[in-house]
Image (cartoon, rainbow, N blue to C red; front, side):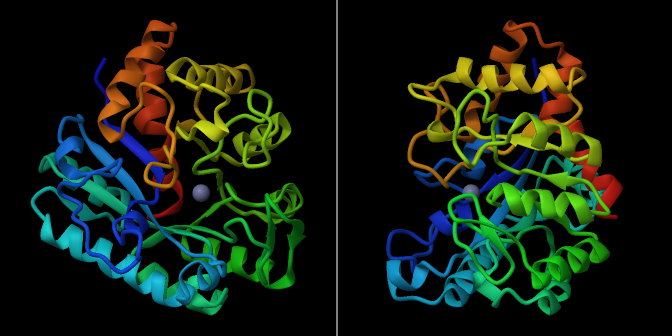
Length: 317
Ligand SMILES: [Zn+2]
């Protein structure tokens, strides 16, 4: 069972900054969940690299989220440049295909949180030009755009402006950290497919970071996808690869063809992955597990690759 991997979310850019958030780790080889040497075993690879920011960074590190955003962006750009025979930034779906033909991985820049550029919808165009193709509104805080899964609170007028501007530019909206209220506000106004880049099923693991069945149904209706998260806290107690499959099977009760399910491992954004999932090199084992549980090779290839790529092709030309 071989398939290329398209992963919608990781925090490797942030993790490369180290504990002091001022280091210069290597993407080629490191002790994190993702490096290019281990990813080399995959049969094709697209990784969305999030630049993560929250206002809480002031308290955590006495550093402004703007500074951390700049460091993450500089780090990931430098590391991609240092490894240009192995990986390039993809600005369009065609870039993904071209990189694949050359045996190279693709990196897509994404945003987790908006504190790093002052929640300013007017700056989205600059971010688009740099290569950002998917944006969230919040991390776990309530901010001038929206409320989060930990705070509650809907979309503000500025949040609506942000969604509208992102979609005008061809950037996907990622609802993974939003409050339920803000999720439904986004659904009400969206003109494009909605992504939950790294969320599981609340029916299987009842945490606010996961999606209710109604939310998942609505994401399907927009033509979007949900990325399966490998973080144990969002899978369930003592989670292993079977638990990941439980979430998958539950989503399949709603989306029987599996056209709206993808991968969003949350690698390097969490301490404890599902048992049996060590890092990016474990995606083939998870595919084997899915196959053993009755998923066809075609379905697995859709979940691993085609579904996420299809959304990019429809929205990010
Ligand atoms: Zn996250």
